[in-house]
Amino acid sequence: VANWRILPHAQKEQKFLEIVFKRSVLKDEEVAMEIVMEQEFEPGQSLLLPSLKAENVQYESGTILLLSPRDMELRVQEVKGLAEHDIALIGENSGEFIKRYAYRFEGSDYQGKITTELKQSEISVKTVINLLVEDDWLNFGYFLTFKIDFAGSDTFYFRLPATLGKNLD
Image (cartoon, rainbow, N blue to C red; front, side, top):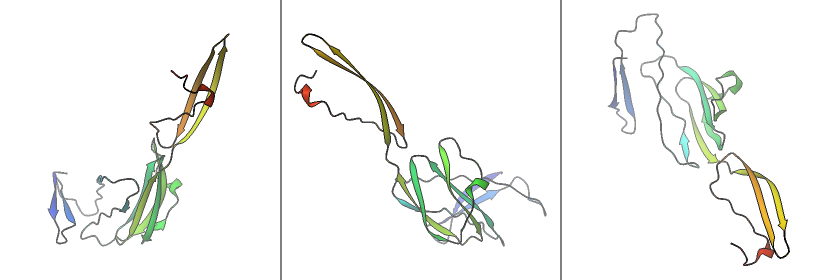
């Protein structure tokens, strides 16, 4: 690629991506391209499946693979022009990201709406309690090992024994 730029489109909410090659693409030659875009959104917000439409193309087909972090739920609604595809046949889970949905399409007239939601934390704890009993004193020692699945947690609350009363330091 020699250069690329974003150009205005007749429909103001859309833009053109122009890619200029260093040399002409010849007859019967294939060109592979990877175009990566990012968009911020808030969890719980719905967003449309992105659709990159190649201009002056007579036939288009492909696959869409949706991945997300393990602590996020995805739902796809209002699907049009997409056929569900077996996710096992496409790619691999990528570290902290797992495959959620896969679709095949033919033509560029497809759509879908993605809804996201963060999973709630699932916390389990193993506790060892040591009690040191003296003549007039009781010492509690709690050793806690937390396991946190899905979403992180930054605050922990403990209900203290009622017998402690105000004698807590």
